[in-house]
Length: 110
Length: 110
Image 1: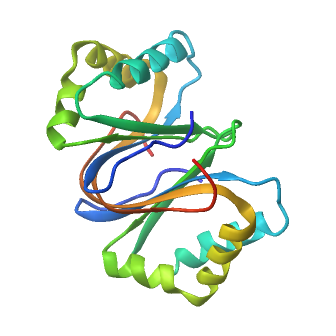
Image 2: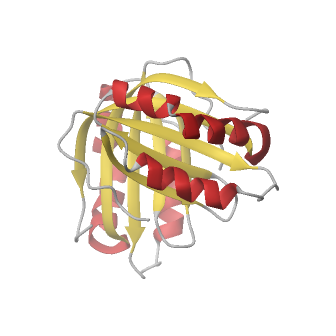
Image 3: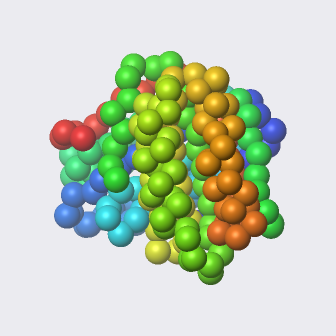
C-alpha cells in the first residue's frame, strides 16, 4: 500500500490509530477484505496504512463527505468486522474524523 | 511512541505520509530532535508516528489551531530539517492539514 491519490481539498479523513492484541486469527483476511470493500463504497477517495515493528498502526482513509463516512461505518459487513475488532483484534484504538483543508506534496512521483 | 492524548475536538491534525530514500545519514537524529522540539511548541497536542516494513511512514501531529501549525512550519530549526528532508531523506511525501471534528476510542487504556 502506498500514497492515496486524493483530489484537491476539501475532503474528509478518518484517522484510525491502533495497537493489536496477540490474536491474529481472521485479522489479516478481514482487514484486506475491508480495504477492498471500502474501495467500492460511494465517496471513497483512497487509503494509506502502515504498522511499525513496535506495534502501532495508523490507517488514514479519505472520503468525499461525512455522509460517505457514516454510510461506510454503518455498512453491514463492516459492522461485523468492527465488532470483531473491538472484541478480539484491537488492544486499543483511536478514531478521529477530520476535514482536510489543505494539502501539498514533496519530491518525486507518488 | 504510542497514542496521543488529545482533548475533545475541535483541534487540528497534520497528516504526513512519506517514503524514505536510502540515505540514513542524520535522519534519525534530526527526526527525534524534531519530535522533541515540536513537543515544546505552543499549541502542540501530541503526535502518533509509525513506519512499516514496506517503507510507508505515517506521522500525525495534533495542534490547537492553524496558527500553531503555521508557526511550527516556520520555526527556523524545523525549516532547516524540512529542506534537508526534501532534498535528501524523503523519496516522496504528502502533507495534509485537517480539522478534527469528531473522535472516539476503543477497548482498554491508551
